[in-house]
Image 1 (spheres, one colour):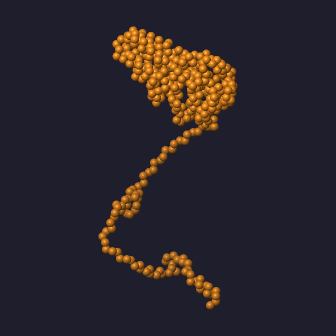
Image 2 (cartoon, rainbow, N blue to C red):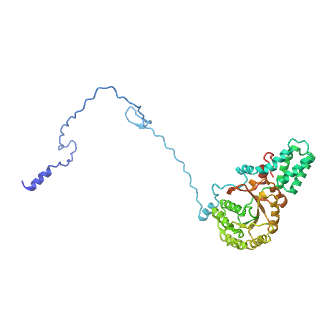
Image 3 (cartoon, one colour):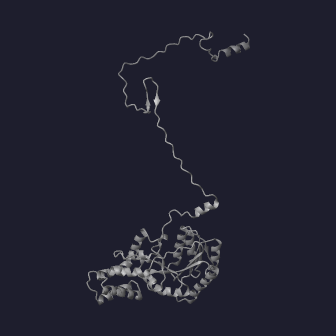
Length: 421
C-alpha cells in the first residue's frame, strides 16, 4: 500500500458526518434498525407519594375545559391619564423673572407670630414681674383705693421705667375711670393695659421700597448692639431675596470693621470699608456708588458708637446725612436708634440728643429679653413719637423681629387680655 493510501485509510477511520436523510416514503430512505431496549430499574413497591406542601396554582385565572384547550382570562390594563407638561416661559427673560419672583423655600418669618409670641412671653418674664404682677397684687381684693395705694402704684410704674410723664397720665386715667364708676379696683390692671396699648399705636413694620434704593443708618451709643443688629438685618434681607450692600462707617472703634466683615461674610454680602481711623463720610460716599453699580436694593450703614455729649462725633453723623442727601437724593432714608432696653430712661435722653443731629425714623430695642425695664417701650412712643421698628429677643439671627405693639401688650399683660391696639 502506498503511503498516501495509508493516509487515506487513517482519514476514513474518523466518524463520517451524518448524511442527509431522504424524505419519508422515498425509495432511498434506509430502513431503521431496531433500537436497543434500555434496562429500566424496577420500581419498588411503595404507597402513594407524599406531598409536604400543598400545590399552589401560579396562574389562578387559567381554566382547562373538557376538550383540553387552555384559556386564560387577562384583566384589561387601565390606561394611564396623560398629564400635560407645564408650559415653560417663552424666552430667557421670562424664566429669569419667574426665578426672581419665586420665594426661597424655608424662609423664616420675622413677624411677631406663632412661636415668637410664646418666646416673647418668656422674654418678658422680668418686666411682667416688675410691673404687671405688682399692680395686680396691689389692687386684688380691694373695695376702695386710698392715697397710700395710689402712691404705691406710682412707685411701681416709675420702677418699670414708664417715665414720670407717662406715669402721671396713666394714674390720672385710672383715677378718672374709678371716679366715674366705669372701672372697679379689681379691673384697674386691665384698664392700665388698655391705656398703654393705646399709647403705642398700631404696628408699623418696615419694608424696603422695591422701586428705589433704601438706605438704613444705625446710630446709638457704644455697646447698644448696632453691629450685631446690622448683621442680623442683612441676613434677613438676604433670606428675603434682596440685594444688600454694607457700609463699614464705624472707623473709630478698633476692630469694628473686622467684626462687621464677619457678619457680612455669613450672609455673603459685600462690605465697603476704608482704613481704621478714616473718614466715615467717605465710606458712605463709596458705598452709595457701589450700591448703585451693583443695582442693590438696600444699603445698610453702620456708624461709630458715640456718647450724646461728644460734639465732634455727633457732627460726623450730620456730615454723613449731607453725603446721602447729595449722592442719593431719591433714596428712601431710614435712621434708626439702636437702644439697649436695659438702660431704661437713659435711652430717652439718648434719643433726644441723637434726634437733634439726625432725624430719627425708628427705634430698635435690643436685649429686651433680659430687662425688667420694658416699660421704656411705652415712653419712647409716647414722649418722642418715634415708632419701635424691631425688637431683639435673643442672640439668634431670627430673634430680631418686627415689633408689634398689640402682641407686646398682650404678652406683657397675658392674664388681663387687653384689646388690640
